[in-house]
Length: 130
Image 1 (cartoon, one colour):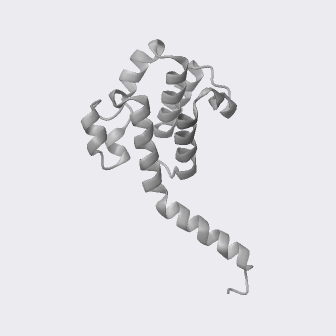
Image 2 (cartoon, rainbow, N blue to C red):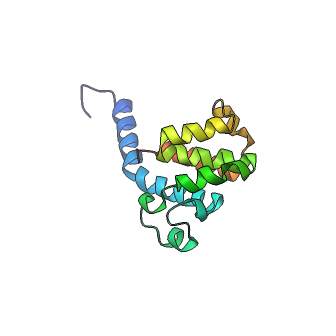
């Protein structure tokens, strides 16, 4: 034990280090789930094959032009989930899309089903930057 710091502080630091060491892999797994739910047509090269063979989040970047072009014809839930995903990739573009959904704050995610909420929660917990 380090005499300068209480054991509970040292334990908390160790837990956080362990969490953030595995966060990139956990983020990617959550991102893949989100892409699968939203539809692979909005990510990477737009094909299911790309989702199947993606090795990193970079293989599944949002296709912002396609998303913007089709955004108005999506259901409100599809728009909200897709905009939330985009916001992890690019906060400004995602924020604009969320604004187009009427998103005013995190409580607005209450309209998403449990599966989509879990993806967003896992992304938040494991986000270390794009």
